[in-house]
Length: 291
Image (cartoon, rainbow, N blue to C red; front, side):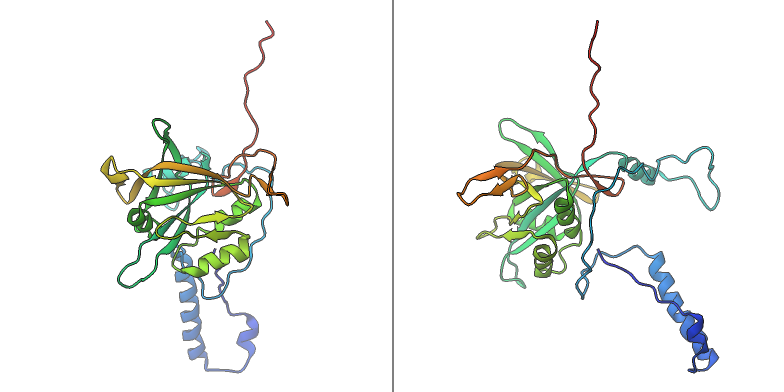
């Protein structure tokens, strides 16, 4: 993700010969004012003009939740720390639940200013299964406006990539939270930083990610009914998709020289909770009946 650096003035700067004190005061106010305005404003999801630094990932012990939907009684609300409003409480509550992390890819059809189909992708935690019979149906929801949503609505096809619950899967998920504004640069970085290639097919078929962090790929088609498979709810759209095929990715195993695939130990998909990628932990099982 984009990094931000705030430059400050040190005592050493003040001792050097330079502009008059009034000019320095104005310049200092301008620099500090700009820095503070950046700190107060929410971060923008933009593509950097220079390549971002490669992140180092590791697997750490579990962390306790960092927030609670209701303030604890030992810290009552004050004018400077008012009680959380209902949307904030809901968002905080959802951080206590684990969600699957998948990557959705699709292809934007050509337009008057774009002569070729354009691959799109985004990381999401809204993937769920809705039905199995007579055909499997899954759903995702996407906040709009979104280039990936436009691609799904325009092409009527999308792929869902189930990621491995390790560093390889987390690296892919994190890279694709950067948005599609960078165009092809996003895909080039995906290969360089994450070791994940992109296979594009002819026409408007959704691209497929190929790498050690991808376990399975669900190839989906948007349903015709109900509502054309696209249901708007406030600023989000629920996308209903019929599963056409499920492919195994490299995250399931490695292909040997004889063409056979050696399966790795079975594992669960990548999870997300309280703003961290996570692995599935312990099981809670009923005690054995000794009576």
